[in-house]
Image (tube, rainbow, N blue to C red):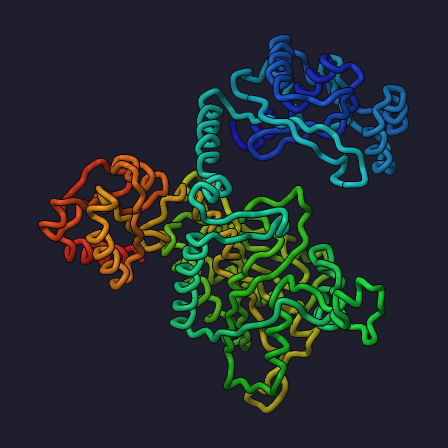
Length: 595
């Protein structure tokens, strides 16, 4: 079964689900029921709220529909007849869809037993073609009609479906493993981060170990950027409304921005109802680009100064609906590892190659060797783009050329480019094969025009530079979330916030030796800590395993006598006694090699 056939099967299962729901709730009103990645869903307006126990009942009814081998019967009718049919049936959601298709003279309907759906198809010939062991209903969720919060919330039933029972079981096993690796769950268990409604949804609070993990990554980021010839800049968290009007964000990015802050008066004045004497409106920044452009424009530039590579690790703020927030991977405040490269046309290709090499280096450094690249280009039929045809043609070609020269797995998305420039998006695959959007390279024809950026070329004339936006992690938060799930919290040694846990057999008798070893490790830049609790050594080992510490050092009388440590590696039951200096030498070598 190819991808298209599987999608048809999943779409057909959505109709089978609706047929089962109609049998269970004859008064049900139907929204939409498409196939989606790995399965299908259908939205319903029902007389009561569904509960998890309803899913196996509906599943059983679906299997009965499949066994009866009902045909998927297509019928093409006049638009007016379809409206009349659904009005009579009281299916107001279908009537609303038909109103949007008023220009259509005819529409297609599909019948499955007693259920008749407004649908373009295609479908299987009959329900009997479906292997009833190859699908499963998974969950119930709320979904506003047409995604609009002003509309009624419907009940959405999700299902998964594959070609056969084996593939379904494999997917279910993968989902089970993904639940174990959920960064929100592990983040709490490993005491890395938290989110508290008192502070605000979508705003991350980093615990000491999480903050240390962040710092390790940030030190790596700064060090490698300086090696790669970048200069570091820093910009504020807020910017004047005029800045965002000039950049165009005020108009084209307003759905992702928060309303203005009035900074011409104090909170106290505002609480007393006083009006600002001088009105000053600022906005939380959703990105860093306009600040960098203003800095570039602060003085005349010569071609001799280019390329300019400015990098900034800065927190930005974007509006997200509360229901769409998801731990570290979807937050309202997050830190972009941002950079802008401003160069001449002649330098553009070489700079792009350097960025691609940088991205690949970062991926490999963090253990990601499987990734896919998506090239988003414009649709020549649409006239909405900033910049010139010449600029677009050049940057699209150079992006594709360099990506192919680097032998990247590339997929072209015609029409996928935003209005201000073509881009390359890198999606890494974790150990479960899931894709995560991380690195991005984006040419920008909008800001150079909006801010009238220029430099003096070799002829002494003003010329517009090329501008490339670039992020490697994408955001620290998302990348850390992906890392947590990829490694299931068991980070490689160089990245682990705590690399060594020292476990004295007796917290009284052996604590001095444990502290001596700990000091020695810290002096050698090895991150260690002591478990000085009064628990048994067995419980200390189990707790260190739960915290996914790479190395546990058990110290007792024998270790004190021989100036050694009993080493137990994460995931191993073996304990080997090693001289202290040799252990330090060994772990430093491992850290250097892994890093």
